[in-house]
Length: 157
Image (cartoon, rainbow, N blue to C red; front, side, top):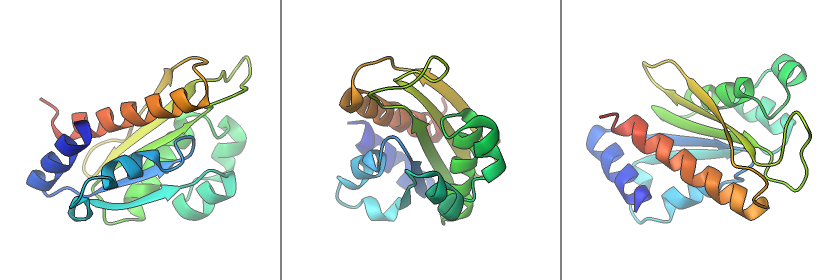
């Protein structure tokens, strides 16, 4: 199971993890904390569904939100960086996207932007188009993808 591997690798490397979640609504944090003993590796999770929460809890800039919208790599970057700086973690992952239903021509259903911040490394971002799979499936796919990003950051070989 990927979460077991994430926790074991983080534990072995002395890394603490934080999450900053919008469209996944805490699902990444839940996946990590479903495993007993995760408290020595998982520091905290921020569920920042509203723009105000992103600003208040993570320090996301109103100007960034205005310029790019909540579903953007710029916001994912600020969310991940904010989670890192506002926690004891040394590794943080962020998600912001459109789980559906809905979306637009410019920001379709199934688009999720990810941010990955790690102490001593530049923050990385990427956008994945999962497509109109339905709300539950998009959220599940985004959670699994984010867990994969964490594992890759922990074991970059």
